[in-house]
Image 1 (cartoon, rainbow, N blue to C red):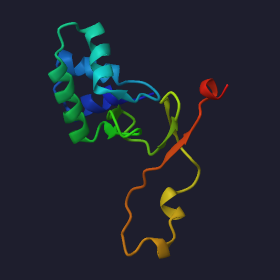
Image 2 (cartoon, rainbow, N blue to C red; image 1 turned 90 degrees about the vertical axis):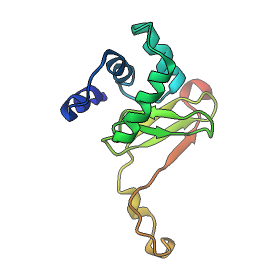
Image 3 (cartoon, helix red, strand yellow; image 1 turned 60 degrees about the horizontal axis):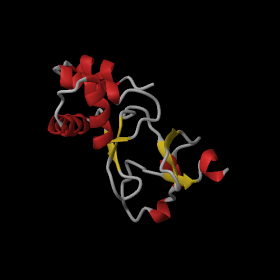
Image 4 (cartoon, rainbow, N blue to C red; image 1 turned 30 degrees about the horizontal axis):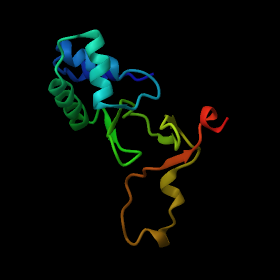
Length: 137
């Protein structure tokens, strides 16, 4: 479960009703919503919330490092509140379902020194792709 609200409170982030609703919408496991999906869910909770407010809040959360912006399909950016726990993504190539996964081992160790070309590698982004059980069945 995402602890986004607790992290934001601990930072002393000014919690307006609009910001709270965006953070609540992003809360949960395997949450990878587009900005439009965040807005649609936020409107259900707070009908007067503006699309621009959602976009601005998402941008601020990304800048703070509390939400990760990702693009798994080369189109719409998605927002992942699971920014504090290292993980990779498993994506269904048919329906686009995304799941957080934590493979065993250190992904930095997989790249041998001979393939680093002198780079000091600090981060690895791996996306596993395949068919989810619903699409495969």
